[in-house]
Image (cartoon, rainbow, N blue to C red; front, side):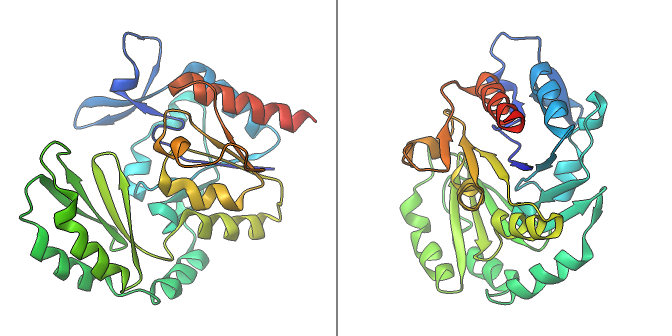
Length: 262
């Protein structure tokens, strides 16, 4: 059995999810500040799953951003991890070179990132764009102020890059621009084939997790995520948690453990 799990807002959470709860474990420090947390129960449940199954973090974070998360601090180590929205697979912390060659070929189906950056230059002065970021020469994203940003002003750019085989995803205060083949599901399929497993589970919360959830046999969506409002809860392979935040994560992990014992 393989469990593919998104990280942010699926397994780990930023400060704003803590409220007054001080029992959560600090798991990511950035610029000297604790910015992400995990619950003690989540750690123990993942350890239980890992006793008989693969648990594979599957994130849009870059390799550098992923390695900031201190899983090993709580005795959690993962042989495999998917980063960069399917752009990289790590095996014991090192890039899987065979997969990297596969992705390199798939990216040839879309225009080069340099062409997209050049087009984005014409829109960088739009009010409400706070940052423009490039991730590992694979994709781009912008950070916006939702109170001042007018999405309609960016629509011509989105339409233009769509013709160049690039997709756009809105996720909170970030808007991502990715080559169409740069998907979590690409890495999921590769690992399932490599590990010879068909019994697959997936956990996610956002629209960027949808393709991963669709290709797995059993998939779970966090109730607090935007994706929960966009899917049909009657889908055969999809379930939405009844609880939110840390409680929702623990609910899903417990369901997966029950499936392990059947």
